[in-house]
Amino acid sequence: MPAARATLEVKAVAGRSVVTGLTSEQPLRLLAPSASDTAAWVYQSSLGGGFIGADALELDVRVDEGATLFLSSQASSKVYRAADARFTLRADVRGTLVYWPDPVVCFAGASLTQGLELSLAPGARLVCVDAYSAGRVARGEVWAFEKMDLGLRVDVAGKTVVREGVLLDPRHGPLHERMGAFEAFATAVLVGVEPPADVKALSRWPWGAVLRAGAASVEALSRELRAALGPSVVRLLGDDPFARKW
Image (tube, rainbow, N blue to C red; front, top):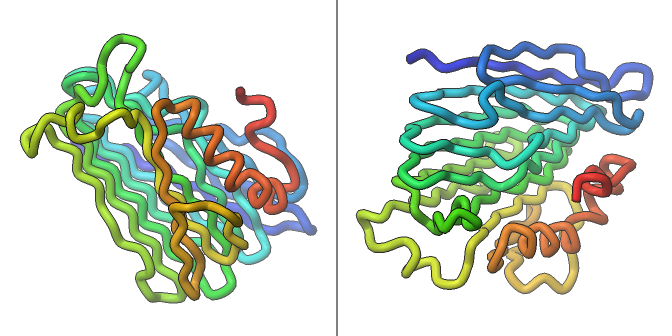
């Protein structure tokens, strides 16, 4: 099955960040509500509420110099039972990108392969939060999915500064035993943004920083990430994108 494609372009126009190009194919949808002059806000959505069957989605994003984009999701990225889905995000960032979707939720028996490929020009800024959870915990589905394969690559000025992958597969050992009491994890990459102070799992580099977090629930993880990164995001966007979400 060919991948469903979507494209998004944001430019600086008369001092504002404006969505100047937006296309999408079913089942992927992009919603661009009105936002502040500081940033364009776009939300990923889906006609089916998530990934089903062999869904394959590709999203290409460009943020021009002087423009700021907040790219998130309407809700958690659900991967339904028996799905074997793929999602790829490719971003060309010359301005500022805050990519912060809700955590991925794989249902029991589902599989997801996801790749985030972010390329930053010199002077570009990035906050990228890549998070995933144990599944539908309220339904008793704790690390019960078939496979989750997550890849993340960040290039700055043509040089790869972050390249990592997370492969969770019960064939390598029972996931619920290996993950312990944790039900949600996240990796956050910051480029051109002052990293938070007093965060234990933070590694600093000449180009930026990487923060890693784990928590006993999605709600606890969200609180931890918002406490650490929220002030920086508000300064970049001119508003708090989560103030009315929870």
